[in-house]
Length: 382
View 1 (tube, helix red, strand yellow):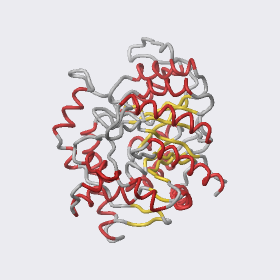
View 2 (tube, one colour):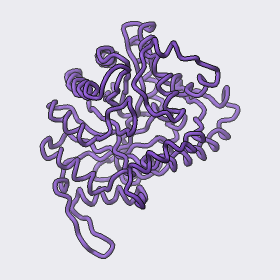
View 3 (cartoon, helix red, strand yellow):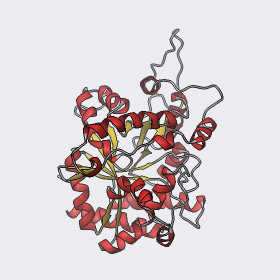
View 4 (cartoon, rainbow, N blue to C red):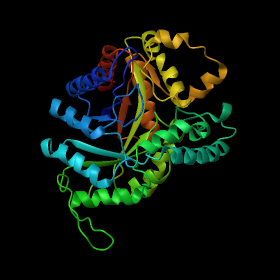
């Protein structure tokens, strides 16, 4: 049986465009996604990125929910390192009050980015050792799915720009609690059972009793995957962010899974980058800027306005530059509807995903809409 398709949108700002147009394009895309039968439409959280307009998921989720009628709308993900559980529950509870039964609250722990990068670097070193001899530079294929060698976050972890930006996203002297504690607090606020260590109660209004679907997102076999399993919550694994560790993330979630009031069995959503066009050559042309965009991000320049294919062609690529982005470029699904559907089905089978979440970025909004149209039709018929 064909598993559902959903969308993750970053509200990309194209080169030569503006934030307002990017946000209008996101709302337009959500309307089209509803018409095309996509199950859910999620938005991401990014900060200090001139090429990404989605910095406030709760606000954008509310705007999209108001512009649509049936499709589920949510965050992929709210970063808990930047705000308190009470604030998150109140924000999403407010949206749920006006659009009950349609809102997904996806949460992630990647708020303390330098700490995250350091943790990933340690995991990368272990994974590199475990994959030695399985292919060129640690790359391998599992059940037809390309699993590249882990990307090293060492340089990003040392970036003074990231440290500065992180300081702007928290109050001076504030520290982020353990992720599991934050998730427990969110659940307690939703259920109306929150109590402090000394017995004081607090009620999130709006938010308490909200019909929110709580998701945990993760990129590795770390705390997020294990916590989602332990709590019996649905889990979103990020192949498009960290293709090297997606299989380990899904395995860790399933190994830790305990049935709950939410789920009797594990439920896995897996994300993928994709660009679809009528033929492979056109799709490759539309996807050209992706490599340059990832390159800018990985050299600590932040996500810039999304380049044109001509701007990507003009970049003086070196062997080092191409190696820097190879894991993301080679795991992007690009081509005709048949080509991309075949690739996504390999991803679904290899991970056992119950749902596939697709993110598509092109310089032109019409090309992005067309990509989703072609994918929806081919997925349904294939």
